[in-house]
Image (cartoon, rainbow, N blue to C red; front, top):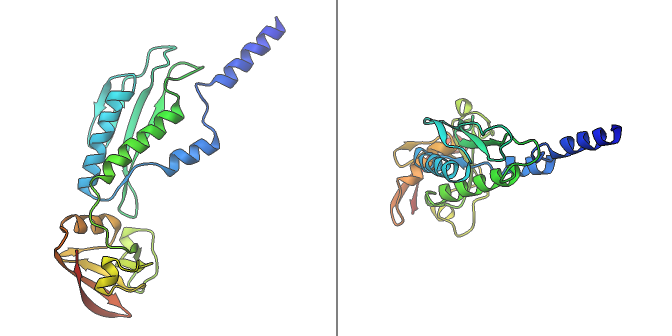
Length: 224
């Protein structure tokens, strides 16, 4: 009887409906869908709702502009129940996080890791269809002196780093260390504002970019 009890406890502990390993958790965190404008985030949220409807085992019970939740699964059911949240980060970007679970202590179908990875990829792939033109430079929030900051409230503009050769940014004369403060009529202090500005531009457009270079304001012309 004692041996049977030990075996049963071992099965319960080893089951735990697919316990997530540290490596899996890191992969899940690394692939969380991120959007940087209203257009992208609306697309991502639409994709999130579609994924939940098609892949979670329970129907949606709550839906709002930043939260989706299904009904819980019945006792011992391996069917997934899910919740999704949309959260804005200090840098102006937004992440879309899903949490999945089931009522069965041994197994969820699909397993929780696979479900989250599939959600992350599906939503991220859909968001990528709404990316604006690329200008070929890494931009990070900075103060007026070009020091990198982590919060939109401390940001004066977007400092340019690693300008790519033969890129739009390079052709316009943007240099590493330039602080971009305006793209056409859009004031830019974070990635969300940059994305919104670039979304308004079509290939072939003439674009004015205002930068601070060594304390001096400069207006550059870029061909989109």
